[in-house]
Amino acid sequence: MGTIAKDTPLAEITLRKYEKPSSFSGRELVRKLCLTLGLLQPGDSRDVVVDVLHVMLKNKGPLSSKDVEEMVVENRKEHGVPLLGIAPSNIRRQLLRCRELFLIEKVKAQYRITENGTFSEIFTNVLERYYLHSIIERTREYMESIDREFLH
Image (tube, rainbow, N blue to C red):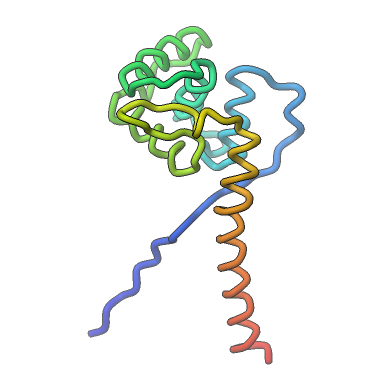
């Protein structure tokens, strides 16, 4: 019996287009960004990732995971959101998801916005030029292989 190939992606990103962000601010603006980047699924009530990213953006300096946990609880209380998904393990998982999209980085057990930059810079320099470009190029290779095998 042969081995079964694992269908584990080397890189993955979900992008969605929503209305222009001009009518949103604060937590709701961060929520729309999370939906846009696939960090949050439409209709999903498990939205602690929104608070994780929101507190990282509001507190520009480095934060420990414990700091983030405490600030997430306060943020959810402040916005009248149920205190669900606030277990330390889940907060760390959401920090990791944000790190996987290069939005935040971990330096000496502290989290911060990547290179203390802006999200516009991160999107242009990392997500668009490198990450998204590599996914598009690999997709192009698959399309060309399909063309060669089935359409020529």
